[in-house]
Image: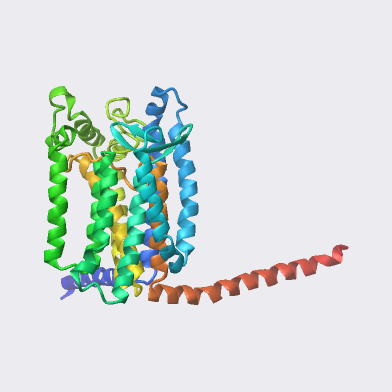
Length: 428
């Protein structure tokens, strides 16, 4: 019987470790820590990689080597303020922002098409120049507007028990979303349109749209997307580069192929931080759309897997928050934000891996670009606020507040005691 004791004890220890891990994973504040910690780690690693990937690009443009890093650091600081504000913002104020933000987004998207105000970058008319080196992309804020407005609309209709009627489920959510999509497509930004369509699908899924209604919306969106792709030679060329291993005629698959070269060169542990060869002019957009390829080249598989794990943790935490909250608006908003971040990460990383066509969308919280970073960090703040408002999390936080106050009171008493002892030295 003695030889059986060793395997039995090992099995008992493994079961004990599993149960402890499961209890820790099921704690009320797990989602809160995953969202806060995961987003901050992605932001920190993204800043490091932006600094590494953008130096050659900056020097080639006659700019200081840290030019793009400084701009991204400034955007991260402003985004941190937005994240804190959103995390502490009451739900009523979040809902109050929905209609003004939607109106401003539509106005700015129309303004982009005005000659002299709208600015074209690499074939896409989707920027507004603010003066000097600063410009912003209104379509990035349209994602946040659709999430907040759609969540508020569905929550109000749910309170009135109208979501069981297909007319109320689709109108005006789908027409307004199509207006935003149309304005973005006027600027030829197919990538952002894809993410906006994913947010719309996520909101309808959370609202409990029937399968036939869901399939109808997907069919219409798919038909419009196919038409827009088939009528554009540039978009057709991007689909032709799926799985390409050679730049092809006229180097039409140059970016896709060199992204694969960068990942292949990294191997298991990478060439070392700052030692990428592809960023020396071979790989276009190394600090924006293809920063994941530079990460794979410099940090290897060991550096890219944690990035994937952090996005998976954010997605899990967002789904958990949306499933456990009692407030319909919070459920729709959390689900919309989670759909936005995970869909954009999948589209970006899939394009770098050659599994999806290059859509020109940045990696959330990671790529260079203040226009994308600011609304994304505000959206993460909304997720943190939703995680804090879970019933179990709210109870834990309420129990912790008296303990924190008690500790602070003890520190004050000790400090006052020390000062009282020192007074006989002559102080008055």
